[in-house]
Length: 168
Image (cartoon, rainbow, N blue to C red; front, side, top):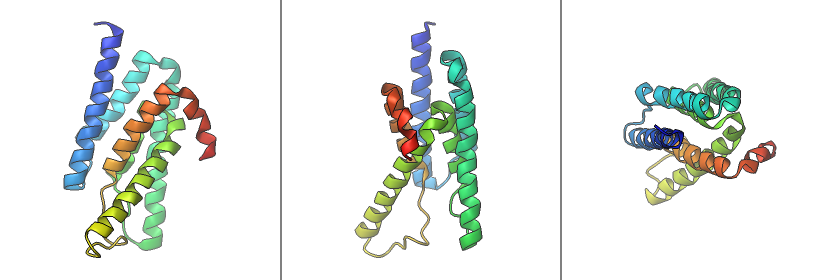
């Protein structure tokens, strides 16, 4: 099998997992391990096969992605005494870090948070005060998936974009 066809299959797998994860989280409020783990491992395997010089950045991306949301989880828990983010979101961000490297994580989180805020405000306005923004749980996985796919494509198409990570 030619390497470009194999790379295309990897990218198709990446997009398929992101779409499925976004769909499941939107409808069920869960990001299942049976989808997040293969996404993470396929990202690392992609780096091994096609870009071994970026493997360290991907491993660091997986670790930083998971740990950043893990820290946010515990800070929020100690401040509000309730869970604010799910472990599936941590695993999804780790998988996105494995696919795109640690340099992309700031952009992914910024894009996901911005789209999540816009979505929450639109939902609040459209449901006419039937939704409390402070107590109604909203799935963050679709925002992460869309941001991860979009920012991943932008960073791979325009490598200088990753160099602007210091702005975040």
